Image (cartoon, rainbow, N blue to C red; front, side):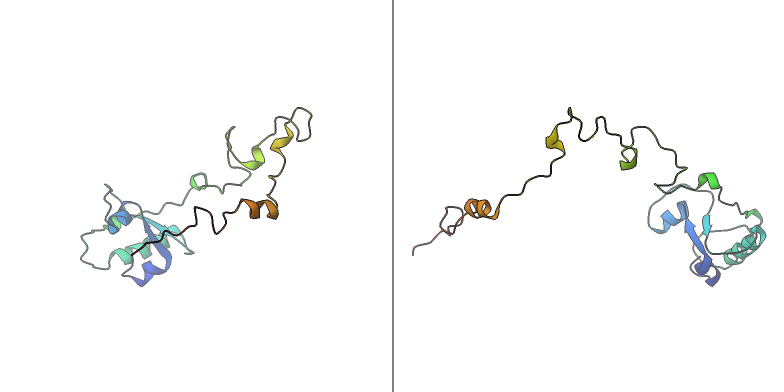
Length: 145
């Protein structure tokens, strides 16, 4: 695919052959190619891939143009984005939009400490708790000669 200008522009190699390119091995009997930004019919796509496959490269891959076929990606196979309204949702997923509060926020039975923001220590308290220069932690050991 990369050796042909036709392949570089519109097609992406995927599947087992792509993994073999990176040193991973997986048994495969076909070559999976994704066409991107390529307007045309299935026959045009097959003719273009046959022209790419006819390019002779010593890589050990043999392609029989008579066995080429183009299959459109089925809509039901395409993954939907996470927030898509038609995406099936399982009960118990942790999407914020799906969470339901068991008791209202200001209900008398709801512990108020859950909804309070954590208090920050005052600068005066932080100054008093910070180790001073003379504390044991910050002392530098001295060596006597």
